[in-house]
Amino acid sequence: MKKRIFSGAQPTGELHIGNYLGALKNWVALQDDYEAFYCIVNLHAITLPQDPNSLREKTLDLARIYLAAGVDPQRSTIFIQSDVAEHAELTWVLSCISRMGELERMTQFKDKGKGNSGAGVGLFTYPVLMASDILLYQTDLVPVGQDQKQHLELSRDLAERFNRDYGVAFKIPEPYIPKAGASIKSLQDPAKKMSKSDENLNGSIFLLDDADTITKKIKRAVTDSGTEITFDESRPAINNLLTIYQLVTDKTQDECLAQFEGKGYGQFKGELAEATVEFLRPFQARVKDYDDDALSRILRTGAEKARSIAAATLSDVYAKMGLR
Ligand code: AMP
Ligand code: TRP
Image (tube, rainbow, N blue to C red):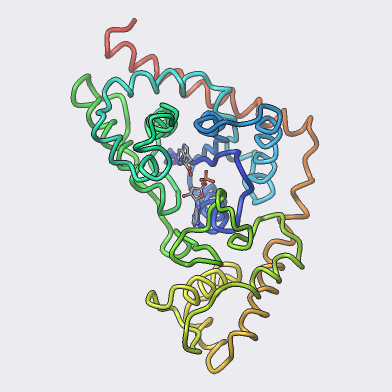
């Protein structure tokens, strides 16, 4: 039997090339060898206030993005988190075995909510919902960017704790974090990751940016002192740009180094802009491929398949805890 993978992204903001290179690209590659579940995590999105109409729209847009990136609905299950009630139900159960201290240590919570008594409780329990997503499907592998590693460790801890205290109900999932691209940085500040919530729009290349916009953003990207174009963590701006180049062209590091040896930043940025535009072109063309009906069918079928697996796990969990 094929091993299982599960991953998801939030239908908030606009997806950027960091999401693509850190996560989506691997989702597509892994679906050949794994039984894959790709979820649109709209329940995570409401941990911050969302406009209902815009949330509905963004949820479908994100499904289109998964499909355009190459997630194949014949092979992989694509579904909306809120269509499968078990995600919320298991979250309650896992909340009851989670500890305040371990959730307080989550860096995403520290960044977004800690110390602010007006912050929503959902921001605090966010990683428990994520653990439920993963554990409901007896997931073997979770392809994510570096920023999700800590949440994945929590998922493993909760699974191990439940299995130990109530009997084995969950598989212990492994993270899959790519060697290159796990943390693409802002083009304006390479100390920060490229992020949907960055106010400086020049820091991110969005997946639906047109060629002109992409070229302008790359031309404006900050660089490091010096002139060499190398993979070197101590020169994070150039390292980041070269990593993007490597991933959008599928070249090896050596090929990239050889190509830009002795060349200036100007020329490098020109070639990077061109390669990025080319990389996104077929993706952007496919985003309009699915009309609303086709999309609804895919999501409905996806939710049914997901529900059948999630329900089996949840009923085992309830039985083991004495709930039914
Ligand atoms: P999100 O949009 O926050 O739901 O993230 C979706 C996926 O993209 C997750 O697997 C993240 O780890 C990944 N991701 C987000 N930002 C970056 C980044 N700057 N570089 C690499 N991967 C990222
Ligand atoms: N928390 C993840 C993020 O912000 C999204 C997510 C929710 C997820 N549930 C998941 C990723 C389950 C992998 C597996 O990127």
